Image (cartoon, rainbow, N blue to C red; front, side):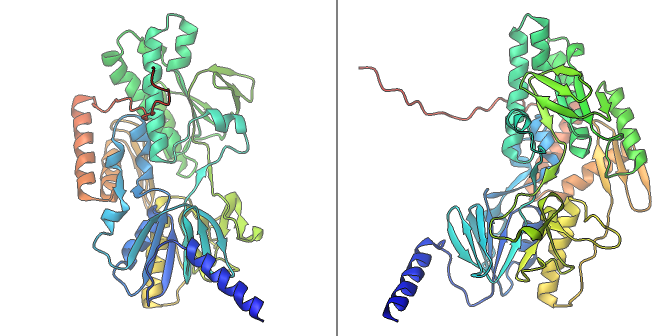
Amino acid sequence: MLLKVTLLLISRIKLHLYMLNIPDSKYERIVIVGGGFAGFTLAKKLQNKPIQLILIDKNNYHQFQPLFYQVAMAGLEPSSISFPLRKAFQNCDNIVIRVAELQEVKTEEKRILTDQGEIYYDKLVLAMGTKTNFYGNKEIEEKAFSLKTVAESLYLRNSILEDFEKALMEKNYELRQKYIDVVIVGGGATGVELAGALAEMKQYILPKEYKEIDSKEVDIHLVQAGDALLKGMSKEAGETALKYLQKLGVNVILNKRVNSYDGNNVVVNDGTTIPCTKVIWAAGVHCRKVLGLDEDSYVRGNRLAVNDKLQLLKHPSIYALGDQAFLSDEEYEHGHPQVAQVAIQQAKYLAKEWIKKKDKGFKYKDLGSMATIGRNKAVVDLPKMKFKGFFAWILWLFVHIQSLIGFKNKIFVLINWMWNYITYDQSLRLIIKPFKRSTSKPKT
């Protein structure tokens, strides 16, 4: 008996040592993992309520994913689409923020293990979003660019600008082509918007800043495995996007898949080879699995199956929101689309349900979707109408500015876009390399 008590005390002491330094509270503790659209919105709706909220993210900022491509194309600075989490909640007494990464969920003990320590919870909300899906192709994963974080956007921006600099010094035509040609894989909104932005850079920037490069030599290829672009939108939107991109000089390749990429050549499934040093992979996403959850909790793309209260089927104290949640109903048999609006609506529903306890299930209201394909060109699908062109582009601008966090960010993005529209130019093409401390020994 004495041995049993001793072991129990030792385990509790160990647990205390490994717990993150979070103050105790008399209120229910809700741990939110992920500071994206879902996690951020839920925390905002529950701020200053009689609840202790622990918001965990591997970054100390919220990032606006729909505009990552503009950072990559040197249209916006990363600070314009990011917002510090601590600043967002600096007037909230019930929210504790920790920069940590989830490693495991201990469901029976109601604790999570992070890379910084352990945290107990009364309710756990998983809202970690998605990561790029390379469909098991390790070669492409190692050599292609993805666009799921601000850091990846900056890395792509640096690589594009560095390759332009290399192309200026290369006399050999074929080698020069590898530096200036780009292959984008995936014809969804990200791929289409990237292709449009690159085409405009080719049209407006290269002739002014890289005069020695013939802009006509620059080839932009967009490879889509399906028979249409913007599969999540209407047929008309996809057809319009195709026309816009072709008019901008983008080589759109439909019904083809990229089989391999060795860093120098892209091989398509019909045997075609495209020489290039830049492949941007925008062909799909999936969720990462969380250690400690049952294997049968996962469905399509490693999403977590939830009921209409957004609870995991086997663990009612664990919730999943946004891209991680898979909720099937009559209208969305294959789950809701993995877009920001779903995440935001789910977060608002959950906060309201916890506060007012109306015991109603979640129902998604589709507010529409949109994509821009360059200057004055966009497509918009609303529930009762569809349109394209300049007015659609203006609406796209307005919606994205309104959705940004922070008044300063809204103003900076608006000024950037206005300046770019007037001058056909932008002054953000900086190659920012990470600092590396020298490890060489001083000479004696």
